[in-house]
Length: 416
Image 1: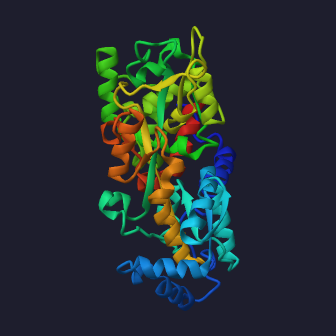
Image 2: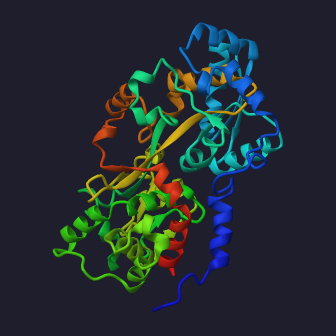
């Protein structure tokens, strides 16, 4: 049996860099940045009508208070946030101060500021939902707020414990110019075949946390991957690679992968052994896959919203929606109010605005609004599948958070 855990330093460094930048579990009062007394937080919550003091939303009063505050500061995972400045000021008289920051950088910055007793940001626009759910909500670093004006159009899971503004996805794509009759693969197991060696491009899970979360989500579905294997190869999967058998013996991975070898882990191992090409930019993946005129183009795993980057005659790709057992994973982008935000009413107005008229910058093919009425309109407007009709797995933020260290160790073991 081969030696296990031969890269403890690599695991520790990557964990520190990617997965625990903001801490990895319960924290003490000092760790949570409680430099102000709990009385100060309670006073702020009461004044802001958030948390235990949330009640009926009087928007006339909220908007009047927001105008008095005059400003709102947001950390945003999307640069499109800057498109809202003029409209927000014109409609509500509120100045927008926005910072385009990755979700991980947002969380680290927010934590450091709060630990130093600096409460400067009002809203975070973020897709690092496992960390928000696992640490920032329990520690009281952020607070949930759902505008009453849109609540009827949201599922319960889109309202609690975090307000989802839109759904983004990581999906399998193909060159629709070269393959005009449809995708050249019909099953995720095709990606493990020799003919696709070195021809699948995707972000590196070690530097792009969302890609790791997508793969971890697939690991939650071994039965579907087993059925897909049998459909692809005509017989059940009964023989597993040596490393997959060894991993099944490790208690570390029981929550993540179970105590028996399974098809999802086997698929991931074979995919990683088939020399996928890691590309830093999801837009670059779309360009590499979709460049017109290729005889033998690669496949790609990228963000579905990059459909907006298609250029007829130059860049043409399509999502492989017919691939079994699913062609991708979808995850939420959420809006939260930061603890002791200096402009809580302006924060509420911004969140509402980004859910209504201010959603327009994200009204693009592949970025689906969490609002069912808007999502239906998007499908009709763009001529794309309705969100509920897409065969996408929804990321389980609680599972991803609780298994993040195990996933990293598993990934490094399977990659070697």
